[in-house]
Image (tube, rainbow, N blue to C red; front, side):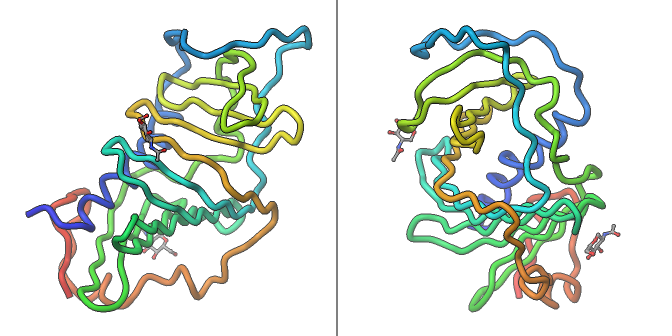
Length: 216
Ligand SMILES: *[C@@H]1O[C@H](CO)[C@@H](O)[C@H](O)[C@H]1NC(C)=O
Ligand SMILES: *[C@@H]1O[C@H](CO)[C@@H](O)[C@H](O)[C@H]1NC(C)=O
């Protein structure tokens, strides 16, 4: 049975964990060119992507492949070894996605019909320098910002503001597009928020299976 949380988990999995997997497991290789971008020429030396700050909070506007929309509160925290996405699906559920550097992720909702699923991906969260080795594609305007654009392993297209070096947008190979609305360097989510609820541990869970969602 496909439930809301199953769908949410699939999206989260596509958006984040495949990224981690691909970036960690695969070497760089030559990718196809995006030809429909209005490229702007630059005479400067080829730029490299700015590493992610070790801790930041970003509010993301996401357009999913289904053309459904969601907001994500992204709390990246490398020192604490966690990457948190709190997804607000348009007129839908609020889905917590807590990813730990030991490979375990928790997906859960709160309140009535709360559900939880624990998944062991076997890989940790993206390193701050996960874009190292990305291929520079050039300079484009996106979302109204002049950006440098890189691509890595045919999996992610990453737009960085030329002026401020902040991420503006990233797209995944499958069409999921994330637009950065706020970017607060150094912001940290309180630990209490990321504690997975008790029902993540009390019911039988089956790791690595999206169909094994637990009803409480
Ligand atoms: C979402 O993405 C699709 C495909 O790129 C596009 O046609 C649509 O206009 C986008 N919707 C919003 C609200 O951004
Ligand atoms: C990974 O860390 C989280 C948070 O500390 C913990 O809940 C989880 O059980 C750990 N997973 C493994 C496989 O040790």
